[in-house]
Amino acid sequence: MKKWDSVAIVGVGLIGGSIGLTLRKRGLTGKVIGIGRRASSLRKARAKGAVTTTTTNIARGVADAELIVVCTPVERVVDHVCQAAEACPAGALITDAGSTKAQIVAALDGSPSERLLSDVAFVGSHPLAGSEKTGPQFAREDLFDSRICIVTPTRRTGPRDFARTVDFWSSLGSTVVKMTPREHDEAVAAVSHVPHVVASILAGSTPKQLLSLVSTGWLDATRIAAGDVELWRQILATNRSHVLKSLAKFEKVLTSFRAALESENDAKVAKLLKTGKDNRDAVGS
Amino acid sequence: MKKWDSVAIVGVGLIGGSIGLTLRKRGLTGKVIGIGRRASSLRKARAKGAVTTTTTNIARGVADAELIVVCTPVERVVDHVCQAAEACPAGALITDAGSTKAQIVAALDGSPSERLLSDVAFVGSHPLAGSEKTGPQFAREDLFDSRICIVTPTRRTGPRDFARTVDFWSSLGSTVVKMTPREHDEAVAAVSHVPHVVASILAGSTPKQLLSLVSTGWLDATRIAAGDVELWRQILATNRSHVLKSLAKFEKVLTSFRAALESENDAKVAKLLKTGKDNRDAVGS
Image (cartoon, chains in turn blue, brown):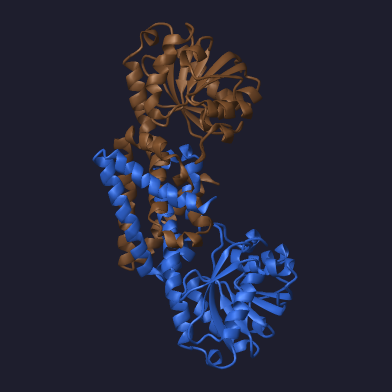
């Protein structure tokens, strides 16, 4: 595996912090520069061992970085990639960890930064790992281990830059899957964004006076609803059409389920339960 | 805590097996008779240490039992309680672990068994504990620890029989909550049955070709969908009206959520996400 001389991480929350921690624990780099807005988060990231130095200044932070990973909320990624591109060394690779890809990649392919047209590369990524918890204090060195990371090159992506991006995520333990940005957004709408919406609605529609009675089933089914509201608002806003399409599939099955239950068609109820069980059993724990 | 001379368990799956295991590990009884249809399940329960003797004959199994716990699927509970009542000693207490209570308790209050009118007592119970796994091999001695058990006495329940039932579940580590059968069914529709339906629909509506991409969020949100289809068909069938009412609440919030997302009213989306997060955060992990 390639070792990086210096990696800059823009946004040191759970994802950025876990990237830094994994790079350091695996001896993949000597220097991890944590870049963030809040001194308190940067302190936590340093205390956790996720970064070696910190700064609130993005230009200063990326000045010597061979690799820059942007781990900020999706609506800020394009800005941060451009700011990093303007200040980083020639030949640097920039990638991100944003949960949606089409808007980000299209904006950056439209080259809002001159440097992205010449001597700096951006390749979009999305590690399918995370937690309902936020902040570098929850960073884990095994967060990406045996997880999938989707990488979304375009026609403008150079083969060497794509290979370096694959190498990077592989070195953290992830299995890389290549998709177009659009394929990515469609897929994660189904496997991540709609589950979040459904869990949130399930939690939100449970009467407050019954919350003392919840057990493991409710707790599992709603766990992700504890995720950060603003992060998720941005994710849904930047993947609106695919989320709506995927939600429509959920609603269609829900309508069948309710109709079967109402009409006492319990064979149909059992059949729908079995479809759910079969899909769940196909995946494992 | 009261010690029982002899406890009979009708149906030694996850719940029945865990009751037996907990009774034995806590030294609450010397003898646990496991009663079941299948010799293979009874063997597993014995191997696990959940029961001391086994039989496929319910009358023989309850002949000396001071306490009988019926842990069979909800549609079989009434029959098994009656069979046990006909054959058990005078003064015995019968309870159950069924996930719905109104139909079961009403049927037994209607006294299909002469003995239930004279010298044997039935008190309905529902321990809010379980797992998507089934079978005595998954029995756990901590399954009921710090969990709620709902007990549903009626006007016909004697105070001593109610107290003995409370004592029994408390001795397994549970906190007992008293409700009417109807209150119980309404509450569990919201905190258990609708979550199961929603998780099942979420799993079932995920396109099969995307199952290789699921991550922790989807896995948590759909875990309970792996539950036994026939058990859940029976639960939904015996709590139909409350499940439909509770599902309607979920659907109402879903409709608002979709409308907000469609109309790009992202402040409303954030507000709905926050309601879900607030309820989830109020409960803990």
